[in-house]
Length: 360
Ligand SMILES: *Cc1c(COP(=O)(O)O)cnc(C)c1O
Image 1 (cartoon, rainbow, N blue to C red):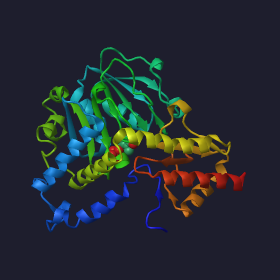
Image 2 (cartoon, rainbow, N blue to C red):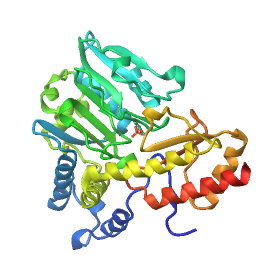
Image 3 (cartoon, rainbow, N blue to C red):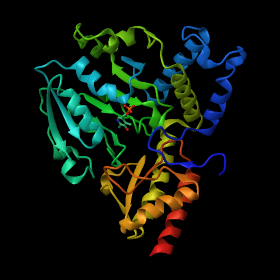
Image 4 (cartoon, rainbow, N blue to C red):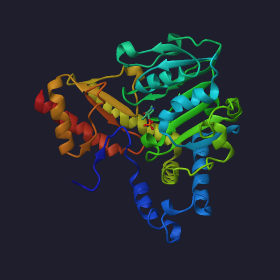
């Protein structure tokens, strides 16, 4: 095996090689201090600078306007399923959710513990092959917010446009944050676990509108209030130092490449090549409806299910790892996040053509 193979894992996922190589150095001796980054106090001026830069680059790259706070939290993206309603919803208040996959379903279950949840749209009957257009659902005007998952990692669907509803948006962007430009001002809260598109597991980025910080009931435990972390710039307790550092390095890399606009271009090209390979033959079948296709997670099956195991095995033997689809969809999934190289997609497409030819 070569030192680095093509890693299509859905998460934790591929990171830019230059970030990994720098991290390997910094973990032993950071900025010539004679100690590694993860051995330092989180209150040291070195780490404080790392954390500040990470926050500043997040704001710069995403165009976070004034009046928002960026937080670096723990507990994974899954803890946001309950933290959001716990902080923003009272028992008798309404929130609207769109059910477009496993992650929204889990968020709905948790939110029901805290308020009146209305599910305005669900594609569950279709095995989550699509996300809705604006004209396919309505939002109760009494809703405190409209919650949706911008990219459904498992099913390979994505909102091409953010919902155009007159409601405060809240979105789980775990698997497509920093993949394209967004208008943050339309959102009350955006969050993402780092391990898909911006770093290693261990940190969750939350971007929250500042006026929402005060909504929380005082009975909520200190660690679970957003305002606790906002007040102390995510240093109320020890932050996940290494994960925050890595996210910062990934931001640097992203900025060097031209930011989220350049990344969106690259992502369109990469996914375009792969979908074309799927569409150009009856041998492969895309899982998602065309208008809902994800640029991050490309899900497909083989027309002949019997061949899927051989496809995944042969691919692995040629250095394409992590192509097995999630058990709820079956088939294959190629996760091609920001850091996944174009060259890897081109080579996979060649492999797919050769495999189809051999077995047709
Ligand atoms: C992976 C994922 C999650 C869960 O993340 P954890 O950090 O493991 O809790 C939630 N939402 C989406 C969209 C994901 O892709």
